[in-house]
Length: 87
Image 1 (cartoon, rainbow, N blue to C red):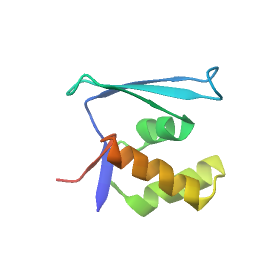
Image 2: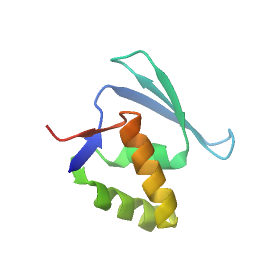
Image 3: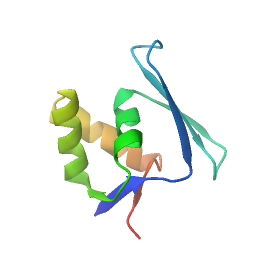
Image 4: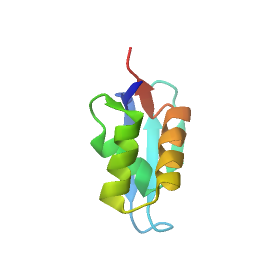
């Protein structure tokens, strides 16, 4: 299944808070989410539909993290509707 970042999000990364904090506002629901630098990387770079594995590999390569952390970040983004499935 392919995913991309929801077009109804506004996000800001603040690098000086807790080693990097991402604030995300969902225009559709009015909710505010807080994420880490990996969530920011997803918001900033996954603008077209990509396979879940492609997103995980991107995070591992660009941020030098292990697969477990990359999978956790992507699954969190899907659960919180930051990443939406292709329709």
